[in-house]
Length: 311
Length: 323
Image (cartoon, rainbow over all chains, first blue to last red; front, side, top):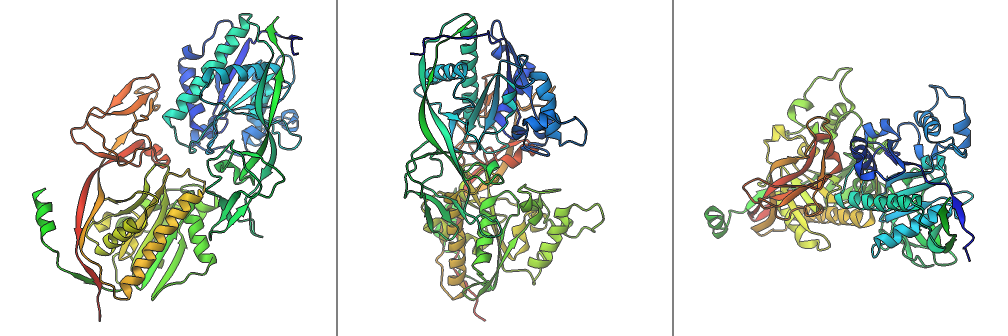
């Protein structure tokens, strides 16, 4: 049914994070633009704060300085005693937790959008951290309808092992925007403009919600993350094969057992040997070579969102 | 136009040149351009040391940059091969890449001297949609022009073009100038730090065709003269528009130029799309061809793309010189 209304407080404080990875240029550019002139992101009754999360990485146009900021928001890091000896990004995580959190508390920001790019052909992907976040599910449903016939796949990262502690996770409702393909350090006009449009719809949703509009129960098709697949490596840890041309750029398309998966440097095809059909994503993301990930498999699922209305 | 037609009507005199007995293939000159890194490593794994009668040397040019997967550590290695830099005295303050350039000059050069290897082939990637481009500093090196012609004829899976950066040898700053003959193979689009199988396979094809040509040349094949087209000469660079106060870039390359390397840019065509929505148009007088459109490494020089003039080059018949 879903008509047991889930009552939400007004979404009063919203942040837009750019530069969590300093070489992902759409978010860096958009946030800098909005810091100078926030007219475009202004919505009635809500404070929308654009914020560069990793300024040192942005300055060097590198993913991170000491450690990946988007993995740094662990309970351990956030509760560690502060100090200059901590890695830069851990210090930064503590500062961000103070401004926009504390994570898990009633004082935390209502919504944080975290803007990312990927070298993978993922289009405009929305990243959802919890299958029970009805507010986020309703927002994503709204966004998908608004940009149709263009698609907006939803990646659900809720997984006991694969879920990671993101900068946006300090908020009650964290939303990742992952737009690609775009090389690191490069700003493509089409990628920039599509991220801008998705954000516009997201903020429109928040404004409608705050005005008291009730959003009826709905379902959202998502891709739930399943398994991390590394590159084949030799005994020294060197990569011995590349993502196969048949799999390259095929994010969100079915990968069946027996389908080509990798190609060795001397031309041999290695095939997928899983039990059933999966939907790969983050295929050939530059930043994941060091994280031992060629792609991640997902499984399709339909989530139910209850009706929501502002109290 | 008249000069070109006149040249075409006259058959050029056949040329004979010495055999290419020492060939070098270099990858990782920029440490995050991955096709060349993996291709050189694969050639080393296969212990490929000969191409017919020629000896093959494979080099990872900038191992420190490869180690950290960055373009360079102190400065761009591929700008360090001018005569001036190669002969500059080394001090404590000398950047790593300058020292490395001098080492490579000892290994593959000395540049401009008899002891230099016969052919240097330097492997690069670009984030620009340039397909397969051969880049060199002369259109009168007949070895290079014949290699280009073979590569262009044999490779059909991507467009193949030649780019000329016209400079006197002493001022040529790229590694390919170390050999008696030299050129770069530039393949894109590929993000830096990523290896794409299709791009790797294309680069491998180009290297295979190059080594195939070398073997045929060395064993006495006669190569006909004729014309090669799709030759582009660098004219000038176009810079990103910036805010005069904040110095921030204020526009992205326009969607009508993005990914359209080597297409025509006419006066009045859109070049940039400002974040505010306005369009910046090309205001030059000459119709030119953009290339290196949105190359990541050029942001630090504020270059959005280069512009080139297109031409056709007549090449003479070529055969190896018999002693």
